[in-house]
Image 1 (cartoon, rainbow, N blue to C red):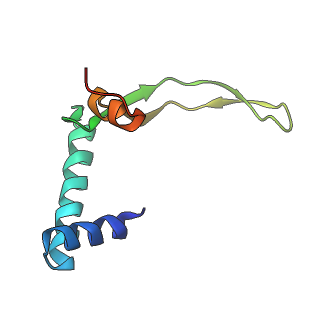
Image 2 (image 1 turned 90 degrees about the vertical axis):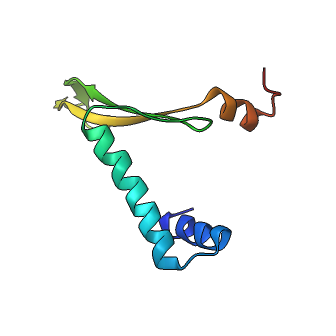
Length: 95
């Protein structure tokens, strides 16, 4: 599923114009990005948590040539699904 598929699903589910559904999805994604960039986590109850993590530089190695090179520090977004959703995915009853 790609972004346009999500927009189309929202459009059909809510019976709204495509442009309005697109605007809603774009706004949602922009809010999530801005919140993560400001250093806050994004928690969506029943779905999961998005976190922005800083990774330190570390040594790396090209597996083909075995040549070592440094991997630069970077920021990565991690997602942790909620326990409720994990249980639903695995077919467990809520505990």
